[in-house]
Amino acid sequence: MMTAVFAAVIVVIPGAPTTQAVGADEITINGLRLERCESVTYPGTRAWCGSLQRPIDAGSSSSLPIHFTLTLPASARPNSTELAAVLGRPLIAAFEGGPGYGGIDSGDAYAQMLGPLMAQRAMLVMDARGTGRSGAINCRSLQRGIGGFLKAARTCARQLGSNVDDYGTAKAADDAAALIAALGFQQADVYGDSYGTFMAQVLAGRHPALIRSLVLDGAYPVTGESAWYPTQGPALSRALTQVCDADPVCSAYPDGTVDQLSRLLDRLRKKPLAVTAPGGDGIRHRVRITPENVLDVAFNGTYIDATYREFDPAVRAALAGDPLPLGRLVAEVEYPAGYAETARENSTGQFLAVTCHDYPLLYDMSAATPVRREQLRKAIAEARKSTPGLFAPFTIDEYVDSSWETLYDCLTWAQLAPSDSRPPAPPSGVYPDVPVLVLSGSLDTITTTAEGDMVAAQFPRSRHVEVLYGVHVQAMGATVPCAAELVRSFFQDPEAVVAVDPAPCANPRPQQHETFARTAQGIDEGRAAVLTVADVVNRVRALWSDRGRGLRGGTWTASYIDDDEVTMRLDEVRFFEDLPVSGTARWIPSRGSVRAAVSLPGGRFTIEWSDASDGVTIRDAR
Image 1 (cartoon, rainbow, N blue to C red):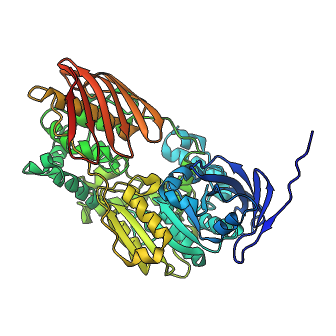
Image 2 (cartoon, helix red, strand yellow):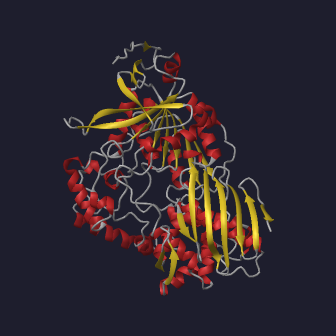
């Protein structure tokens, strides 16, 4: 057996990290050893994985590994001057949302957002402490939803013991700063999505010298927000109105979506509706439609933009005596597609360890649980009196009793020291004077445009861009192409982009169902076939499931060819009671294009449409 011998070569550029090739599949950067890996697989790049030991707490002898992936251009090979040049440029660091999600598994989505920049720059993603590969908090009952949430939360806090307060964002941000420094980078352009924006703000406040620029996508303010999240109710009403105003059918009605919703809620408060409807799991369920789960559906549109396409016509159908379309939306929230996520994929324990430590609450985390319960009771009673319309057209109690709320989550968590139960604001009291780009979706009801305004106001040089018809998080994965382009332009020259108004940026507006008519009577056959195919595409887009049921009968299956192609097979799918549709459809998400060949009792049709055009092409294939 021959033993390969590799000469160690060190490449040095003033101010840049030093590199040493250990072998074909290993490299040392600034003394930190990394191995080739497949965590990020973007074309034209190579991923290198490593870990950095970090103390669990200041002065503690216990430590945990913070795992990370550094993605480099494929041309930046060990020992090359190109590698030294890449490492001499500002790092791009991306932080994932949650809390609970690790960042490494989202590396491909960040790379897709950065696109051509991946050929020039190094990109860092990490699993924050308590997530992914970095000691994911695994509280089994809490993760699996066994035995009641509050009981499982109390057990999880006890499981963490004296380390229960060691997973806050400040310590995670210190880990990130230590990792960036260990790799030898002088500065970083930082992207955060959702909770990742919170992390990015804390990093900027605690380690300002490391920050060259920030992109905060779906920004959640570290300070300035309250535990009631009073921006959410107005954001929902604004979103429903915006979608209706943009749709010719909805806007032609004398009253808008919010008025119709108010009428329906009045009825449901007197008598909830019951209906058997297909859930996201492909099974029909008997569901009760109540004000509380209608609230869940409406707010959940921030994650499933297809909800906005269906919400107004579903509400109108329920008022007209057909609760099935709205019942389906309820069933899809209550019985979602997919499987229970593991702690490594999304740690519920880490979610609580962060939110109970860092987020605004209606009770004092340094108090015992009975005291917290009384504080919460008083806060709810006061809200009923002082701000009854906070979530209008829903009531305070409907919000409190919904699945959307998070008011109760930390009631049974461990008592924290007073210093551990406040937001991690900048130690200096101010954020650094660096270029900041804030992105908000106009239809986002979880990190609202108003919250984006709060965040932008705290940075001296910020630009806040509202993406028209955008939902939660705009640029990650290049979901909204113009938003991803803004991020790329910004990271190339942060000063120039912040100094000027960017071009208007918009997501394709949700195309609403014209109606949820029970039968196809009076509707052209080709048009009825289009509506049936569109409903299946909408289900796939909303649920990312591989199978499901038609609204009024039949089944469909979906095959995911790659990240940007889905083929669907329809087997007598009934969007209308009297019109079974069978055939195939092909959907390209990046282009919003659909091509279908279907048959129905009246004949056969080929159908084409895309986001790039306003029209639909229907050809009679008989």
